[in-house]
Length: 256
Image (cartoon, rainbow, N blue to C red; front, side, top):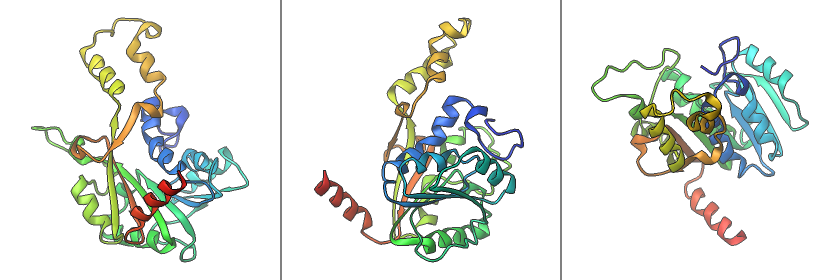
């Protein structure tokens, strides 16, 4: 399952490269905008994502509600601009307007339904007026197979399709940009080849499918606002201020 020995969280060294890179991709999107930013990572788990962001950000704080996760992350990742704290995401102890960016990946599905608005409201509260919230979760539309019964992950409180997630986020954030995480064209090719079983009998070091998956990179995934029902995961960028996304794009054009 790609979890540590306690079963609490994902660790890069205990999971397949494909599974790890898929979970790292949203952090990659944040990292591109992390320069000189103060960032809160909610549900930091092992801490790999927070540490990755700290390579660019001014400061990163990772929080988790599991004490073992926090201790694990503190022992594994260190840096002058990186901290891990034990905290409930629905009751943040930070002051209003503290963070430029808040991210919470593969976390919202673990929040109890009656606490979802509190969770999102707390995130909005600690964001600066121009702040941005990045969130990702599995895509229930893809997880549900046509004609087959569906049981959600027993560790999940709530799972979403694109329309449901957008509706929820818009209750707190006035502007929501939604995209889906998809395999690249190369990645899709190897998915199809794998299904054929063509190279199944080859030794692993000679199997091109196994070699691809063992060396998979961030470039083997892509994001798109199209075909959300077929996305592996849903990724949203939520703005605290209406019109913030268009202003941000305009500034990028002027600086580029």
